[in-house]
Image: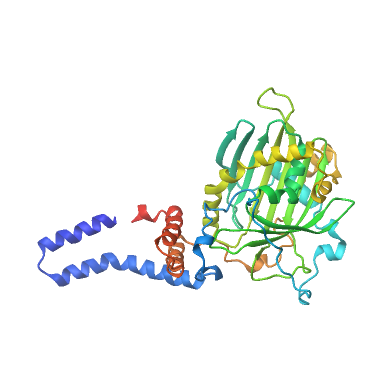
Length: 411
């Protein structure tokens, strides 16, 4: 469309003697484009987050390859980080968390188990899943799906099958934060705040490293495991915690859900129950536009997932050598026993839990992240102008915005 408009102007240059008429037509053609760009820039500056301030050390920050990885983040072994500072006093206006009222065991309940069971059996009533990926290695296969609910961030479902691995080993591997720090490129701090010796429920605190243009993200999560035969239902979700004050950096993620069903399945090699399947259901509101988050997930997904298998095999060798179990692995062995009949009864119930239950400040963020594509381009213009570190920065920002907005085709 844009090329045809330019051609028309050139034809007018050779066929008309009225410069005023030519300028009028050119203005009518170009004015809508300029208006769109100006609106986008204005909205982009109005929306500009704190991380859009000039970056003092771009070379340090450009650790890119779009680290918004899925389903869980990953970190170099030689990086050393200290825990975030926490003031001695807490805000008196903060409301008490469930852990303070009823103990840590109340953070994750059978309502959460019911919801996970419905997700596993695809009975939760949500939209249909759309497949994103199907990849494999000699000892692991991986499939991933995504869906976009009417409200809330994108939701992801994945199926990973590890050959020659037991459900117990895989359960401990994903639960063990001490070991995760060795292979997870984005987890830079993990700590257990509280745990229940009876149910194994844990209140944990994570800090994850995000790409250079975002501040790090902080997570306060409740998690618990249920066991039925050779199947483990592992629930992890964001929970409020007034005893851990908020800071401007790292930014706390309130809406977070990441839960697994881990169970033995038949091996693709011999048909025996020697393989382990992990069904993961994940969504979170990271505080960035959802369209950009979806692009980052798609681009970085396989790069993150393919590290699972080497990490698992190393973990298996360490366990076989007699290394003592970590605090996290010991907690993973404390789980609530349930029968298959009980699980089926949960799947068939009509009521379901709200995924955003107990999410602090979730209702106060209606701006969501589904920003119109024109506005994102305007925001990219503003951000590129702010991050004045040469053409490379601008190329990255405009490349991301252009890819999902497909502005090139429309012009």
